[in-house]
Image (cartoon, rainbow, N blue to C red; front, side, top):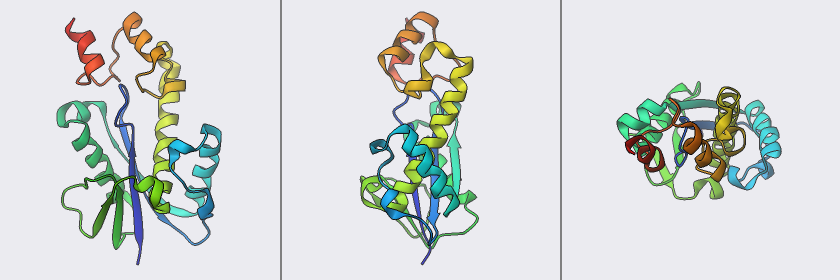
Length: 186
């Protein structure tokens, strides 16, 4: 049986896309390294992500800020998951998804609440997605340095909120999210 793990990253951010990864592990993977991406330091997560990439079949799916605004964050997350699953070069016979929702039309799947903590293949997807999205936000911060995205990755930290207050909203901000919407409507 070929099992894929799927997880998304960035649902709670105020800026940037939502990113999902779908991963099928190969035999050479060190399972001891795999745990919830939020419980691994940035540097270690980068190293583990490279290990996973070398020892798996994986794909990334992205839903843009515009899609988040047009669909809502849940539907955009499911869209990014669906895109990741579709891009897999090997088709899984079972797909394990973190959370309690799955993309429409998916067959042979199981949703698992806190799956990134419980299931190694979902942990691997969590790590790949987080590293991909963090790198994306770090790159974006080179152009938009007033929001500390290289440290907060688009989450609503004090530095990010200060940046919003002092420099306004960018095209990368999620205009439907409360703090952004408040600024735009004041």
